[in-house]
Length: 379
Image 1 (cartoon, rainbow, N blue to C red):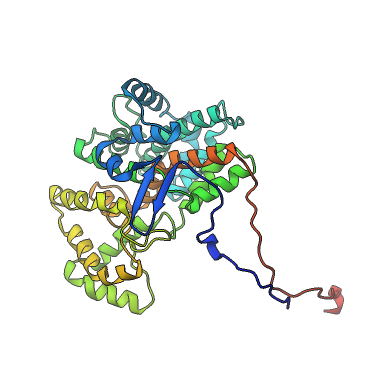
Image 2: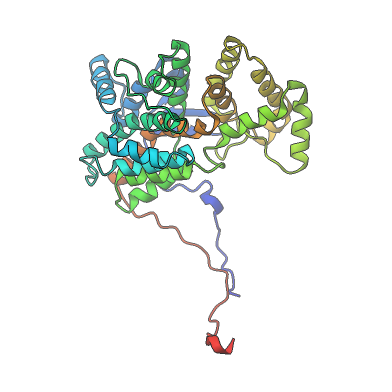
């Protein structure tokens, strides 16, 4: 066996800085998140997803005229080519993230800027993909149920239109506001696994559709984007708040992970989760199902001692309950994450293109060396 060199290996690239960024800042020790310098607390309570997309893509908050023009561009790009709707129909039995990944890839055949990696063209593609992703997710949800997809409604906001295409009626403005906030909270988060995947793809000088397809594929993994779905499965298994302590104790004794807790970066409470906590409670009361929040609250209480070890609730802890209470199918939860994250992937790709270098880390070989080859008839 080869002698292992005395080198430091950063497994999982933990805490390795690969480049500079202006898109977002995370202080995991105190639970702080900024988009382009703006605190997520302000954006979640005062902004809209459309305004936040503009901020991420253009590096500044828009004035009213700029926002209206940008919003009009988003609304004008929601429709899907019939060929892509056919792809969705053909793949309808697949997981929604697989359908989203396939449809995003298929859209490259119909985008006039597909092969153009200039900043201007990448921006245009990012806007189109952000608009089209919600149509893909909603169309697939209906097609697999034997229903006709609903055409986008250009009179509705991004969040309202998604719920409208999903359910066939204009949503309660309070529900739309919740979805809008959720998109804001998921829009960008530094060099996480899916963003890293998108940047690796972009570093080869592949186009944005390739990079977003990579991002969707990486996000599907339960160690990254699937936690919201798993949190709700956990709540369903617990069934009642009185069972929370025993459930957590049993899970921990078996070495299991309590979903919705812990984060690679945050050692304090994920600031995004704070903005969904009261919303989950209020939505449960409004929908006549307060029990789900009570179960999550009981789990959070049981997990409080672990906060001293940096295991705190993350954004997925309450988002799953909100989706569930909005009657969104559980296997769409990750797709909603992806819909909100496309602007972030776009910004990461643009930064990679701006000062590109092929991302190509190395592995330390620890296997056998110079093994003699034996012909097959002598083995």
